[in-house]
Image (cartoon, rainbow, N blue to C red; front, side, top):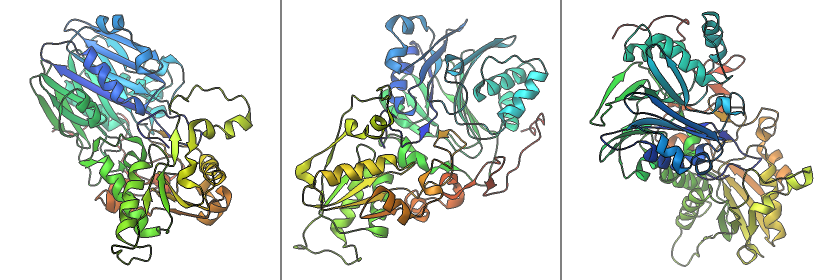
Length: 500
């Protein structure tokens, strides 16, 4: 799988969105938002949008497609104002048409509202039905519009902070939000912190973004992660920000898969640099299941950091745990697969045979790296198993004597309901197969996954503070028909939050 690139493979999960918001002192927000969305393009390629406010009125431009296709210079020029929010989307809930593209905008008696959402609600239908019964008309089937309508209704009768808190008491599930209420930009993270959101300082203002890489792109400085259950309100003139801890939780539910796959390696998520986490995961993969081979090579690009850590550990310690000394030889870390970066999501594959062989269009083995050698391939995860089978075949046909596969995550056995279109249980190869059965299916000489405990150790977190639903089948949120791994408290719909 590829992290930080196009999500084109059939054997991969898809993450819903990237969000951003800026408030600047005296320059237009549109171009900084545009650049930040480019930095977050890996989080969604279905649509892109920006909403700005010039102090008098709201401006919006939302289109399907990549960031570079969704905007032209004239579009950015029309987005006047020094505050605004942006969004890139890969749909996991709602329609594929433009009606669910974001930011979602609404004008009402108390002003204008724009909202960008990363995540999935688990009670969107419930809240939508109640809002519809009270007269709200919906234009899409996405959960983002549900949040926008609920917040707009609360803003008619409450101040901004209390309105947000009231909405947080009614919606349940995974969400990181950037919100534009007139010329005020807000950032909100769900009480368990399932999806990432961080705060950065610019030379002339502040920025909120899904990943710190977007802050880096704007020459900003990461201040910190937005805390679970926290509201951050940026001053309209870019001079500062206020924070409000609206909900307190005893534990978190950070998505471990952000570190394994979704986030850019150069991003800092929940105080951890993603690249270093992946190297740690690679080292632990060697410690748990290392196999002596001539060559260690990554699946580009997502396997690269894992393979680097794995190879470093292999050159320090033998597979049996004994330290290596000089003269023992070294394990070669090599690029054995070259990627064609011009095969994207829109490549037409009209027949099943062509779809099954599509990996050959994207990856080509370097024969001299693998021919006559024993090879370990390092990848971040296996979802359906299709791509892994093709990769093993590809390397074996290039002349490898043995092909071993090591995976930098535990087996994915269950779907995700919180912003990742991962697959149904029936499609997940590990949901009803043992590791040995999967090894036989993909025809590898050996196969091993990383343990859940190793993931927690690499993240310096307890299992209780991570969302591990896709690898345990137990979820941090109350999902109908699924097991919950912790006590879930859900306030009744309409129940107002307690006073601060």
